[in-house]
Length: 343
Ligand code: COA
Image (cartoon, rainbow, N blue to C red; front, side, top):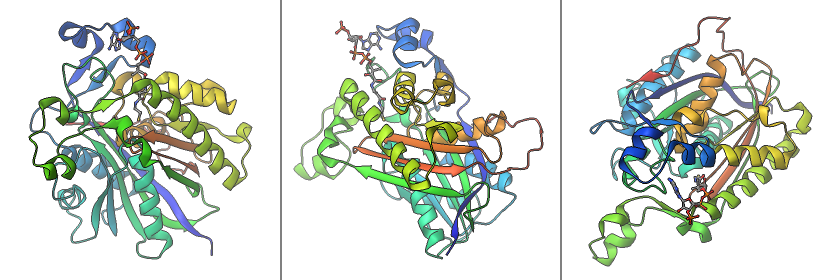
């Protein structure tokens, strides 16, 4: 059987509030020069108090549906590590916000690999015949779990959402999802962690100290694991689809750090110019980063119909993954590219 998932539309949304490196340097011991040189980030978008992940996800989803020319899907899968609430999941809130009726809607938690895990889940629903069309969203109000006074993490992260519509199609069509690889290593769970707020600390009956409610990370170790796993995963999907590296038009990696993206490209012996980067303006938006990058790359004409694209990510868990697809013709026909929606 040749049934596969085909990417049929993209959309994205970011908060209107911009926080530059210079603004951060006014409130903590850091500098624009340090942040740019170590990460490639110049500014990030930050939600106002009261704006939640689903607000961004609904807007990105609306744009993806419009881009796909549909107003109905059979399921919604949301990759997020910053759900609106501990309970319930954000997926049903997003489905309701888009007026999609009583379809299945749920979250997938794989932090910065969340979009690839959600993509795998959505394409699995299609492969199994449970759905003809699925809205796959990566969305985060990630700054809500970042200590705004912590220079080790606050410069790195931002908020945003990206979404794609998958539809059942054929492997030969532009847009076909051709290869997929996922991995995890729970022995590395404490490498990147928000210690409090889940069942572990609650069940101990211990009141968590303030800092335990915030994101912590052993940055240098994460850097090494990220480069290794993203490279391995990319090679795995290239092997699945039988593409040589010279045939890859774009590597769209998780936008955590420009040095990581360049290191992965170098390891793969891929020219750095083929590693798409927009983290300069958004920072690391976790599960949102790949679909936000895809929407921007398509809207600005860098991703063109028929091009061969490899996606790869690494995140807390640890989790990682990669996907290989050809880029679809999204029918923009040279029309002015839409900027991401601003919330
Ligand atoms: N501003 C200024 N100085 C800072 C700083 C900041 N925001 N953060 C740390 N420093 C200092 C450190 O204290 C250290 O000082 P010292 O040499 O006097 O001890 C120095 O800068 C170097 O710190 P280090 O942690 O070695 O920097 P680095 O080059 O490893 O960069 C990260 C730090 C976090 C940017 C980098 O490790 C990284 O990107 N890791 C991966 C993070 C990631 O991608 N996470 C998400 C994956 S899903």
